[in-house]
Image (spheres, rainbow, N blue to C red):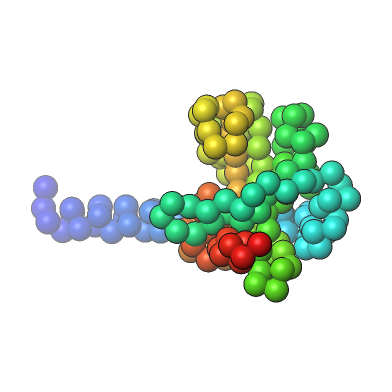
Length: 166
């Protein structure tokens, strides 16, 4: 096989890879936009508590970054349904002035493999830090950009540091 043929095939693979990456980015943005539209009412934490969500402590990563304070709805957690407008957890970053800023939502189900808007959930085995049985989860960082990805667990741009003095 000639070098020209190899270069041509490599170039074709590179183009296909870029097209696939662009399609994944469009799908991620589409789902993040759907989540943002369906859940913007939670920008005020009072809306979350009024709908039955209750806080659990701020979750930080061992290598940096955080998920923030999860406000979890036990009814949604038990029903295993996946509804874009009814996330099992709403995530807030504690701010230095004592306010909470909405950064993401999390969908959780014990039935899987699960997906939402074409995005596969991550599997978490048991035992886990939440005391739950095995489950599938999907974080959607719709309100705060996450350099590690729209659906990553931890966000290096989120911190629990404001909780240290409380």
